[in-house]
Image 1 (cartoon, rainbow, N blue to C red):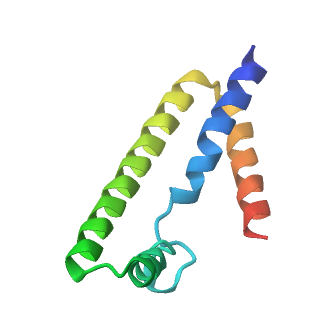
Image 2: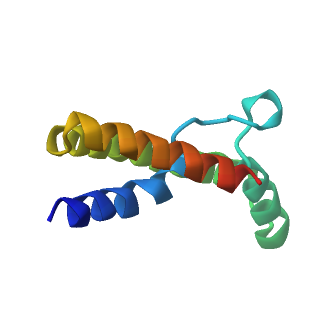
Length: 101
């Protein structure tokens, strides 16, 4: 049962870790999706107003994802034992190293 909980918690949170540290590894802390607005603007011929409004939507979405990530981590930490938390942190660290490669 504990292995299932651990697996599910990892499966839920690992995809969210991509958003865990905004701007990490990017020039001047810029998020790579900022280039998406430029591409959308060119492809769809967006006005400045549309670009601004879409950027606002994307920023709100990003903030919601970060909040969900934080909430999920807190809930998971309440379920796992100290030993399980240590193993989980090690798994996250290992996954982060593999993802960077």
